[in-house]
Image (tube, rainbow, N blue to C red):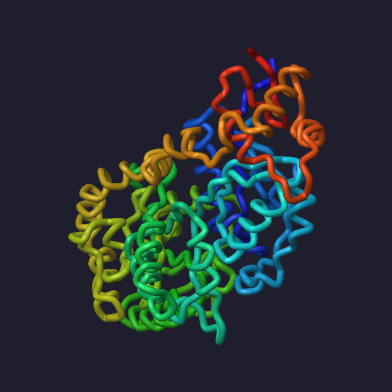
Length: 454
């Protein structure tokens, strides 16, 4: 018996780490979202766009989802700014791989707002998905605090957000920050729309393990962020050099190629090709994690990876970290004050007992942040999968009656054949008819068609 799939979701990608793709936020985040969505609704079918490097079976790949998920090759430019510019939005390629002309999609889950206006136009005007609902998540915003580009794609990002019913960002701090950045372009009415659409979707943690470890030799301090201006990498190096002149009982490790500190006496650059190896390294070796962001910091998976394994973090106040660890967390330092930063690092280096006390208080908070719980709190998922909430044709329209008649005649019919026999042209869409058919209990929705069960 063919499996029932009442909803089809298309997930549009955001890939920015071609050389270190297993550290890319889209690559890390999406498996948790997909697994949770498949548990929330067993009748959801997901088309998941990924670069070939992640799906290459000879290389192990990362696609491990069940029959509810199909993946498609979709190569996109991986330079941050290049990927976001609409000049590289290839409508024909997307059409070929997603088959959106013959495959009605019910939900668009976009992870690249800069392309979302183009996506909704294609799907609404050039396909049979005119009844689609659009949701999103933004991994990154180009602002003067996050990039040094002369021209930035923030305005295109905000235009794409306005196409969504709801778009997640990873903290209230980030929501407030980008809304403030948008005031120079939009009226109060549009700003109110942005405030309604943009919602905090705080990220989660994998398995929580606060089992104590015994540390020998120099204590390992980890800076697992990119070596960019927004991470204040230069400030971190200056602070660690200053501390090393005072004491040599620590070593700083970095994990990104552009944050290589191996030229310093106190530094090493580490590289672990898989998440399992990386997590084992964290648990077995890292004594303290550090953040030195100064003007911009979204929710940091690099930080929560460590917190989940019982590794405390030193982080600045005034950004997103209070939402992560609580405003009373004792290792928050005054943003931009590197002497205060060094002081907090020394507090942990000097006292294993203090470190243990910090972790004991932190553990219950982190246990509430496991991925499944976090994702389920993001949205009213019942609303997303409420068939009455979709735009649809009237009950007795000609298209609805004809589609019902043809499905009944054929018993089982594909999307392509049904659309062809209904003689729907390029400007005539089937999506709203499909949404009406979903309310008919005599029609079973399949992955690529319909079955009459009346």
